[in-house]
Length: 114
Length: 115
Image 1: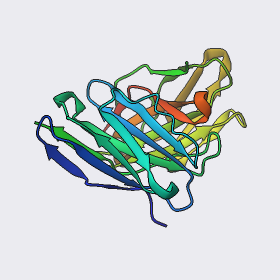
Image 2: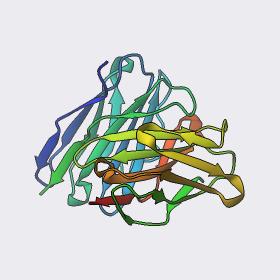
Image 3: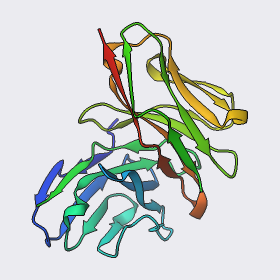
């Protein structure tokens, strides 16, 4: 079946612009996660959605970062007023939602802020 | 808080020889541990996971890992390396605080396989 998909695969933007990154989870998966992979920080958790519960935003690095999940499926990660340190690969993962369940990762969006 | 330490940033082996990638964890409760692999320009793929069942966990592509509580280790092994194993490997621990299953990644080990 179809895996997690993300778009765009690459995004180049200018400092100060806003960007939106999209994630389509595996159908039927109720849990959705965003992670960031950067040279300086490695792989780090950003935000987590589970069903209709309030998201866990504890990993968001600043208030310029936000995310939403519409209809319990597609998610959008928005970065406002991008900075060069936001350059990274943004990874989305989904799981069935059970504890310790396998998270399946998408291919990522490579964001470059000039 | 949960954490993992990957002891080697780079490991180089010859094709056909054993692979050992080391990982130590720190957890305030019985952890769930994973190994993921990332091939160049590809997404993360789960190799195997430990969730308090058998301490020796078998994964895909001939990899396995042993959970040793006394040593707080979860090393990844493979008896015979193949060229296609060259990739970056991440040891990962689950953090269930806040109700979710947030993953905490190690810094990664780059595996190089030489002829």
